[in-house]
Image 1 (cartoon, rainbow, N blue to C red):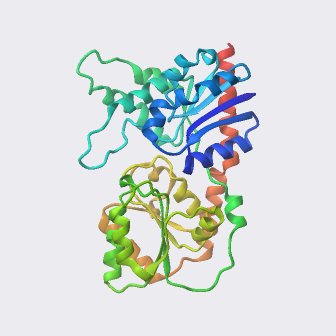
Image 2 (cartoon, one colour):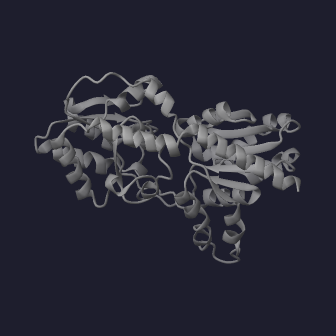
Image 3 (tube, rainbow, N blue to C red):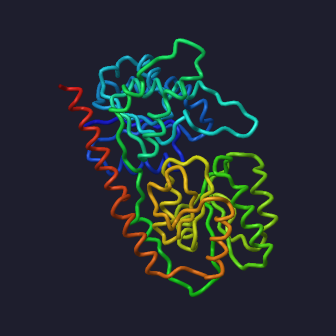
Length: 365
């Protein structure tokens, strides 16, 4: 089957997912992308930017696959040639519950874009059960902002269209870059998230700063993409942690990034927005012990022993890990086996393939 995959935010985890699905799918996938910048403009204008290229392919496309960064209803209106084509949307995020920086008002237009996209799709695929419920269960709450003439019954209309496919990770790629062990060293803590407010870096660095103030010996890899000019929490952390920092900043070379994951012992998240978390999953596959908040998607994917509640519990667990030192190798192997069973990218690609086929079959009835 010929599938046109439109991804207008082609970077980070979006790029990883798109590339891997295109490579592993049993379908013939044509990947059409735009660079991963100016996300608001991508959501509101990508259908116009890519209209001519999509129109040129319309006669050969049997199924249209897009992400939540596409305004699908507007795309179908602008390129009516694809109106008869089965349409599947993969939701990496959604704007119904996405937090906004302190002091900023939410722009509800992006939430309405997600809702109209969902209504224009035949099937909605979410990257976790938590995400599926967060979106479908949040539609009515979101629409309460309308002063009058609020539509009814959209949740009941959309819920049957929802499915879940974890993005997955390529454990084979990660294991292929596993280095030789070099003996005992201070515990190495990993941060490998976007340098954005919704990941709450100030909470992470606050805990590390207090532990460093106690004289505890540890090292830190601070990785992830930065879309800001001067991210204040990171600049302050660089000054505070000094020689404890092994890496600070985005690593362009993926092999170098993977080596930093293998060099780490504990991966920490302090996020207030996360629907799957490829960064944490990849780190866990490289043997890092996850230390994650007891909220969002994390309780769905990780056992209670990997979760914490209040910020004080995060700090206390880090203190115990630092004093204990590096983790036993058999712990790594057990975690990796679970990830390979449930979250391998090949399993994810096969699952998405079957949903595309199901969508095609429904349209042909």
